[in-house]
Every structure is written in structure tokens, then in C-alpha cells.
Length: 587
Image 1 (cartoon, rainbow, N blue to C red):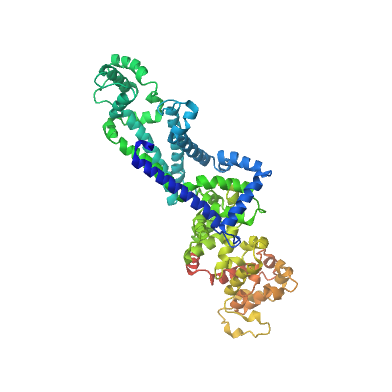
Image 2 (cartoon, rainbow, N blue to C red):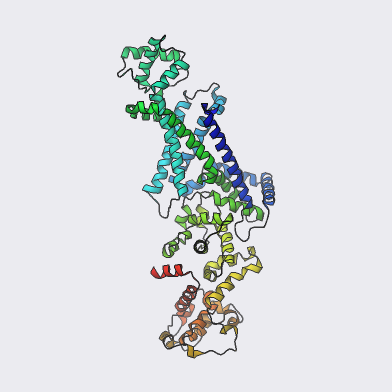
């Protein structure tokens, strides 16, 4: 019976079953989730087949060497983390390898260790001391994690409930384990059990040997005995020989386990309480382990599975990989994110999160909402607008992808999600800004029948009620413009058309009036007459590159480029959500 307890054995197998089923469910979801509008409409079975084909193709190609390099350098040694943040690399390595070695040589010690030493006892070296060495590694990592998130919190580093859970569950497992071993060292009842069951001595018939061993253990092994306050030196001397005869073959000196022994000495005044709490500490330690195991597929800790796969996939896959495999990789990448916020610290659009009050501009904060969307969840209107704004503010600088320690190709992820979001929304004015250049650059990856729709919806929205540009022979009622709307700034413009002549956007069309609606000098003329709606309806203001050629060459010093920029913002304000508009007014 595992753990010497039927109930604990049942709980362990139940936790293991939940872990296995949860992991299978999460992996299946990778093959089912659809990330973005460009993801192929392939069934999970088809995507699994494509993944198998990709793995076989990788094995029988030169990419196998790339796979081995990524496995050793990125997964095992953590090269990407080391390059980005050495403190975080130390933290991660201490926790990962300390905990992994504890699982192998402690949790599975009865299965693994006999391969190395034949007959295995957990109380013998090297396992007696190595267990504490591995525990110290984990504690160092935990301390660094707490310092990083609390004491020396880096800019834009936020802690989600999952981040807190990860630190707490590991801390509880480690502290309860160390305290349990310390309680065993000080426990008199444990000593009696050991003497009778393992040393083969009788407390009455072998009283002299028992007392000698007891004195020696009180003096050197951290035992707290109700019978001895100050051990007699002669009895201790006798105890050395008795210990060698009865105990040394299966028990290394307690001080070798320096961490547990240190806690045992520190807590020796509470030895009686600890002795009575040994079972409670044991149950706490094991139940925390079982909870962590069962909840692992549904928590941040699942990155132990997904992140290594992400690191390898990012190295062996390229843009020519099967679309089904790219879709699967992007779904998996959502689980590989550990919310370390490294990407947010380097994001070129990060200041937009401050000015707009929208934290979803930051890459690390978008991931949870995107995960919900990819798995078929629904966002309310405010959440959808916030994540759309955050995704569209991306400048595609690729900094986040370059520094991501999990190997997530974030730039492609933003591209996929962005296209899906703007197709769903009624109008997104940022489609008409230079932030859409990357979308145009990747036009070949977007279905032709859907490419132009978002821009057309946005243009229709920002043009307001003005429809006269559609009819060239329509008359313009200039009486609708009051004198208050006519801006004296434009009185200096005498229609010389210099701004239109030097404009590179106008020069790129054979028939600019047909393509742009109004060209710069016509926009200035409209504004001079107070026809703001007419000027705002021109496509020119959205195609303006803000190169300032028009403004620099204007002989009358009319701020043409600044005016076009203001028109763009005024037009966009018509379709921006009310909450976002008010937020901008207050900043």
C-alpha cells in the first residue's frame, strides 16, 4: 500500500487520474481551438494527423539537429531566460531542478534509487543530504520569486491569482516537508518506534543499550527526550558504539541533513507539539502534493508541459509549415505563457496602456482574454473593445517575440487575433491608421473577400452623415455652416495647391480625387467654409503619412499636416466607445 495509508493511496490515484485526464483534455483543446480568422477549418483529427506528419518530417530531416539543440539549450539549460533576465533564470532553474530532483529521488525514491544503490534507505547518504540540498535550491528560487514580484517589483509586472497560487503551492509543499522531517528528528515516539521496529531492541530487556543510544541521539542527532535533559558524557560514549551496532547501517547522522536539522534544533522547545503534529504535517505535505498534481493541468503550472513544447516548436517550425500545425502551435502558445511580463517591459506600445488606461495593451495582459476567445468563450462588449484596442495598438516591432522566454511567436499571434477581432466589430477606426501597415504587408495571408471590409466599415463610420462626395454633381449647401464654424486660420489659404502638389500620397495615384475624395487644398477650402463633415469624409486624412511636406512648403504657413491629424482624431472620436473617449479627454 502506497504511503502506508489506504485513504492517502486512494487520494493519490484520484489526483493522478485527474492530472492525466486534465492533461489529455488540454492537449486535445490545442487541436480544437481556433486562433484568429485565418486558422483553417480543420477537425481535431485532421490537425492531429498534420502534427504527426510534421513530427515524422522533422525526425527525418536536418531539423532533427535543430530539435536537439532546442531541447538541450532552450529547454534543459534555459538559454532564452538566461539571455533575457539572469536573475529570473536563477530563480527558474533553482525551483525547476530542485523540485524535479526531489520528485525523482525522494517522491519516487523507492522506484528510482535502488537502480543506483541496490538496497535503498531514505535516511542514508547521499539521499539524506541531497534531499536538503535540493530543498535549499527550491527555497532560494521561492525567495527570488517573492522578491521579484513584491520587494523589487519590476515595471509593468502584475501578479495574477495564478501567479500567487504557484508560489503558495510550492511553498506549502516545501515547508511542510521540511517541518515534517524536523519533527521526526526531535520526536521521542519516532525514536521508540525506530528502536523497537528497526534496531530490534526491547525497551525493557535492552534498557542499557537503549539508554545509551538515546543519550547519543539527544547529544548529536537532535532528539528531544522526556527522560534526558543533559546527556551523561559516559552514556554518550557508550551510545556511539551502540549506534554503530544498531543504527548506523540504516541512518546517517541527522546533522548531515543540515536544513531539516537546523529547523529541528530551532524548534526543539516545541518538540512535544511537533511530535503530536507529525501526522498532521505528513497529511498536509502529501495532500498539498496531490492538490498540486491534480490542479496542474488547469493552472499556471501547466507551463511545465506546454513551455518546452513551445520552445521546440518555435525553432523547428517556420512560416511554410502546414496551416493546421501553425494553428495548433498558436493554441498551445496560449498555455505556454507564464505571465512573466518580460514582453510588457520591452513593448514599444506600452505607454499607450498608461494614456488609455487599458492594461490589455501590454502583451502579457492580453493572453488570458485571448485564451478565452480561442477556446470559444465570449467577451462582453467592454472586454471585447479593450482587447481589440490592445491588440490593434501593437506596432509589430517583434520585441516581445525576441525576448519571450517561452518561445512564443507573439507577433504572429497578434496578427491572427487582430484579424478575427476587426472582422467581428462594427467599426474599428485604427484600421485606417499607420498601425494597419503590417496588415497590408501581410495581405496575402488574409482572404481577399474579407480584407477590405474592416476599412470600409471604419471609413463609413468616420465620414459621419456627409454623403455628397459620393455624388460629384451634388450641390453643396454652404449655408449650413455657421460663421462660428468657419476657422480664421484658413483665411490665409489662397488655394495655391502647393500642399497637394508636394503630397506623396496624392502623387501615388493617377486620379487622386477619385481615390482620395478630397485632396489637401480642397480639405483646407472645406474647412474655411465650415464644412467640417465634408472634410472628415475624405479618405485623404486616413492615407496621410504625416510627413509634413505640405506644411513645410505652404507659403502661407497654414499647418496643413496638423489639421489633417486633428481631423483624423475628431472623426475617430465619433466611433470610439464613449468610455474610451471620456478617458482620453481626462488625460
